[in-house]
Amino acid sequence: MPYRNRASPPTKPNTIGTKSIASPQEMIKRKGVKKISQQISHVKAMEKVPLEESIRLIYPRLTVLVTTANPAREVNAAPYSWIAPVSFSPPMLYLGIQRRETLTVKNIRRGKEFVVNVVTRDWAEKAVSCGAKLPDKVERSGLEFEEGKKVSVPCVKGAKIVLECRLKDIIESGQADHFLILGEIVHAEKEPGLEDEDIAMHISGETFVGPGKRFQVEGKK
Image (cartoon, rainbow, N blue to C red):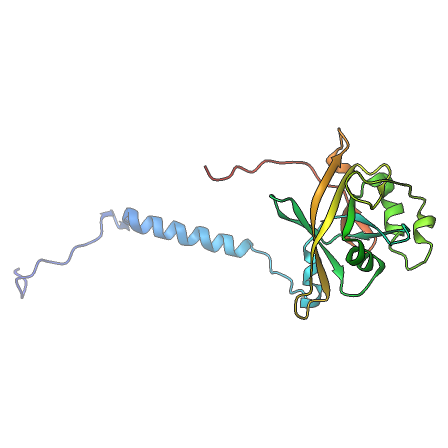
């Protein structure tokens, strides 16, 4: 029986018996949606962290003992874990130090020099003890010191990585509660055979960890 208009009759989906067969495009779409929904269903809910605690999520951090000296050549040492490189050429690093005139800050301002001694497990306890607010904390620590090679500030005797620095700038940024102390590395030493796991990394408080197993990640080519 003829159709009432001259338009082509509507097409019907391919069928085998009474079962519809989706087009390849439709199958891809359906599988993609299913895969995404499966991924979403397996995502764990994130825990909200108070903003005042957010900086603590940047961990673990390299632990260093910064040595400085006053005009009378008296040595001060203090542990820090806010440190990072900022330049290859010239080689420069920064220290984040609480924004107050501590002995470390005063000595750096006056002498324009400081030494970064990377802390390892074998003397981590001595290094951390230098964070005490005691006038004789350095003597109590049991640490020994030796002359620097390029700066007048002594370094920790037995430290496996030593970075001697000259001050480039002290930055006070707006309302930030830390100084950014920029130093140019003028001499560097490392003990041959130093193992990654010997290096002390700070998590928080009195909790530290050694670097884990190395792994490679292939980058863009």
